[in-house]
Image (cartoon, helix red, strand yellow):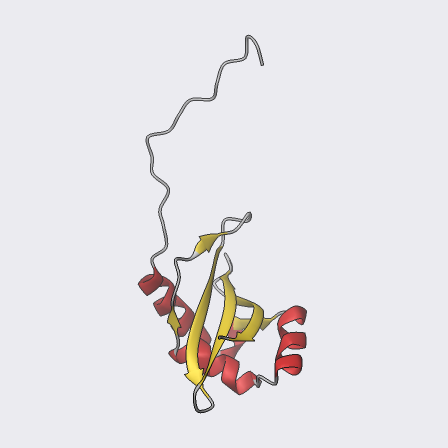
Length: 112
């Protein structure tokens, strides 16, 4: 607007969560199933895609983060962790690292 001053610009760079750090955090949190929240959408996709809860935990505990984590509107990190399971199929689990220190599983899918 005319006559309104622009907010001061910051010289502070926003920190990025690397794939390696995200992967380590996810694996550590998933060691104890109490640290993992399976969302309703994820549960529905697990049934639809015949992905068992044991497979989801296997992915979380042993998988790798293949893309750069994204910051959500709530300033929490979201990323996909993947692992080859059941022979030659690869499963992907999209998780959010919550401020509470837990994981929220948004969805699960078979990778192409």
